[in-house]
Structure formats: structure tokens, C-alpha cells
Amino acid sequence: MSLNSADISRANLVKDEAYRLGFDFCGISKAEFLEEEAPHLEKWLLQNKHGKMAYMANYFDMRLDPRKLVDGAKSVISLLYNYFPDQRQTDPDAPKISKYAYGTDYHFVIKEKLKELLFCLQEKIGEVNGRAFVDSAPVLEKAWAKKSGLGWIGKNANLITRKQGSFFFIAELIVDVDLSPDGPIEDYCGTCTRCIDACPTDAIIQPQVVDGSKCISYFTIELKGEIPDSEKGKFDDWVFGCDVCQDVCPWNRFSKAHNEISFQPKAELMNMQRKDWEEISREVFNKIFASSAVRRTGFEGLKRNIDFIRQTS
Ligand code: B12
Ligand code: SF4
Ligand code: SF4
Image (cartoon, rainbow, N blue to C red; front, side, top):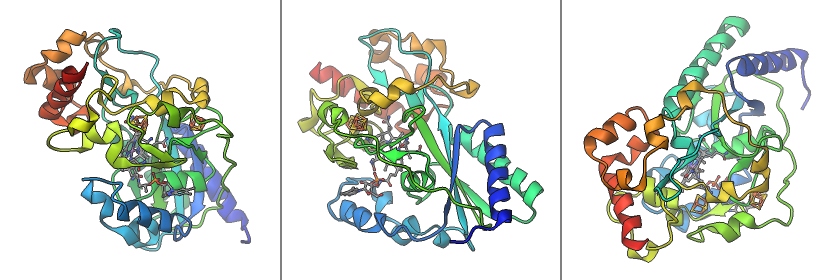
């Protein structure tokens, strides 16, 4: 592809503005059909690896082609936002929640920044039509972040950066302007298999492939109704998401604490003792998780998860 200097300077401008707004990494791809991913996604769905996440089977064509999602799409701008906290839950025996859910729900925090970025581009480049996404639409976000050179897909199926590991949210702007693209980088997993060996439910069925219907994150967040008895004793105290396959990853030794105020956890949350979790009331839930991603599972869901690990620990 021949690169034109206007595409390069627009791409540089996008990155400068993204970093100014607090995004940690930004890379660009040409908006096109995801040819390599298409058969993998199809197989994953046909084998029902999405379990009861029916939404994953919708908009198959759109998920593979951003031009079907945004009229006249030319470029995908992939962005990473760090959520690695410098605090931990203080009671080692307390039920565990994923680090990504410590503070305010990332959908709100990042969506605002994406809108601001789009607005800046409209001001500086001129007419730019685009849409902002963060875990909010049929977009294969990891595939785009990989294509945009932000990292590689680890055997744990997460996007990993060489500089700071994988505790990042992925977001994107899909826009109708040409921007010079970045290429993918190498895979740095090597012979390591720590994530596969450590997964409590054996959900990583082959390198880079997670059986969604076996992941603790699915059971504790996405699944409505009862958690199957077959999972008893396997959750290692996780009651909202699971960080095991990232915690064991050697690349996460390079994680650095975020400095996003909205992601700071409430002290009451970090200090909850096992007993506090077991006795949590709807009032306490509403107070502690007022604007948290934990609301996705709701009070009933969280109670179900706490009861589930109690039955087996
Ligand atoms: C559905 C979903 C889930 C499901 C299914 C997980 C999954 N791996 O798909 C569940 C609920 C289990 C889940 C869990 C988690 N999720 Co999630 N999830 C999503 C969501 C909404 C869609 C992902 C998707 O498209 N899956 C479909 C499968 C087919 O896609 P895939 O995993 O990319 O699969 C590729 C590979 O399997 C590969 N493949 C398939 N077969 C083969 C064969 C070979 C030979 C090869 C080489 C490759 C290959 O091709 C596929 C297509 O590209 C995205 C948001 C989004 N819109 O993208 C967030 C997202 C992926 N999740 C995210 C996070 C943070 C998590 C958790 C860490 C949360 C937690 N702490 O509990 C865990 C991690 C679990 C894990 N190890 O993957 C982040 C990932 C950030 C990052 N750095 O990578 C995302 C991007 C949300 C966001 N915007 O930040 N998640
Ligand atoms: S998040 Fe937990 S359950 Fe899911 S694949 Fe990773 S280690 Fe396994
Ligand atoms: S734990 Fe090892 S194999 Fe798994 S993602 Fe990290 S480097 Fe790759």
C-alpha cells in the first residue's frame, strides 16, 4: 500500500491526542474484513463455546467487518487503557473480584474519553465521521488491537503488550478517514504455558482459545440462573470475574499502576472481610457497587456466586 504524507500526519495527530487524553497505547489498522479470524470465530460459535452468551452469535458479518458497522469506515483506531491497581483486597480469605472491577465501570470512563478524542479529531482534521466502542458492540476488539500492533494474543487469549503486560481495556474509534496503519508485532509467549496450567476450570482449551462457557468470568458474570454442580470446588474464591491466567503471566511483572482516579477502589470494598461478603445486604451492595461493573451480575448474581463458593470451600 502506498502511504501518503497526509495519512501519516493524521495518524500522528490521532496518537498525540490519544496520549494527551490518557490512553496508554494507540495503534491503527485499515478497516477491512478480518479474513484470518472469520473461520476461527465461526468454529468457536458452532462449537457453542459462547455458552448462553447469545449476543455473541448475533451480527456475525458485522463482527468481522467494521465497514458494516460504520458507514464509509476507512480506519480502526485501537486504544488501550490501563486498569492495573496499586491496591489489593486486604483479607486474603475474602471472596475475590477481578481487578478490572475495582473502581467505576470502565464503559462510562472510557466512552467519555473516546467521545472527546473523536471531537478533537473533528476539530483538527475537519469532517470525520466515526463511532466509539468499548466492549459495547460486535467488534473483535482483541483482533483489531493485535492488527494495530499494540501487542500479541497470548495463549490465555488476552492481548499482551511487551511494555506493560495485559491489564488493559481495549477500545476503538472506527472512522471514515484514511490513516497510515501500524503492523502487527511478534508473539512473545514462547514455550511458556503457565496460564493454561493454572486455569482453575481448564477453560483454555488450546493456545489462544478460551471455551467461554467454561471460564469463571462467564459463570460469575454472564450466566443467569444456577452455576452447574460440575464447577463446585473450582472457583478458587473468585466471585466476579477471574484474573488467574493474567496473574500468572510473566509479562504482567511489567504492569504499572494506573493513575485513573475513577478506577480507585473504595476503601470499604478493599477492606471487606470474608464475613462482610457472606452477609452483604442489598443496601451495602448498592452503596459499594453504585457505579461499578459488578452491577452487571447484580445483587442476586453476586449473592449466588458467594453462596456457590461457600458450598464448596
Ligand atoms: C465474550 C467475551 C468474554 C467471554 C469469552 C472470552 C473469550 N476469550 O472470548 C468471557 C465472559 C469468558 C470473557 C472473559 C474475560 N474477558 Co472478555 N470479552 C468478551 C468480548 C465481549 C468478546 C470477545 C470475543 O469476541 N470472543 C469470541 C472469540 C472467538 O474471540 P477471541 O477470544 O478473540 O478468539 C479468537 C481466538 O480464539 C482465535 N482462534 C480461534 N480458534 C483458533 C485456532 C487457532 C489455531 C488460532 C491460532 C487462533 C484461534 O480466533 C478468534 C477470533 O479472533 C470482548 C469485547 C469485544 N467486543 O471484543 C471482551 C474482552 C475480550 N474481555 C476482556 C477481559 C478483560 C476479560 C477478562 C480478563 C475479565 C476477567 N478478569 O474476568 C476475562 C478473560 C478470559 C480469557 N482468558 O479470555 C477484554 C480483554 C482485554 C485484553 N487485554 O485482552 C475485552 C477486549 C473487553 C475490553 N474492551 O477490554 N470475556
Ligand atoms: S479468566 Fe480464569 S477461568 Fe477464565 S480462562 Fe483465565 S484462568 Fe481460566
Ligand atoms: S502465561 Fe505464558 S503462555 Fe500464557 S499468555 Fe503469558 S506468556 Fe503467554
